[in-house]
Image (tube, rainbow, N blue to C red):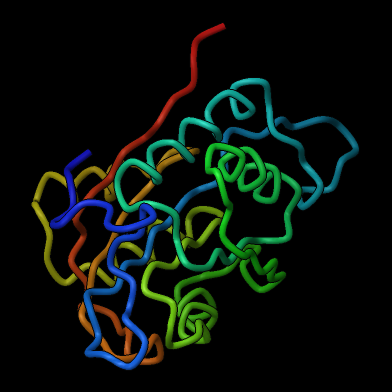
Length: 195
């Protein structure tokens, strides 16, 4: 994963907007849920994580914490596999950030995902979005107006389970986030220990 300018600041925070001050670079961190199981007779929304997903989700939490520090807010799909991914990732931080579970993130495309992100409060500098493909990969590619070619190519080729993408953009409020306005600064696929 490529590092981010400045690294984690006080209390592990990076890129947060200072209240009463000028807007700093905002970050949108996108996390695809960890590997899920496919048990028979279980609705898609209720699918649990597979054993590999249970191992990979904490690694995703560590990767996010080590790159951008804890986010200011988490927006998470209500699907069981997304919620469990978030729970395991959050357990890697001393103080997990607040989370909002939103049913609109399940099976959402770019317009719906962007609408939810744009509702984030103005004082949120780093926002974590936990959800599903193909919507998340499509969102990353739509927002990334620039980025290292190999980083963009990785997302185009595949955005697998537990993948983390970090986008940075300068804006005064989340409603200003639009396609082509962000810089894709990092992509990683954290994996937990092998069995």
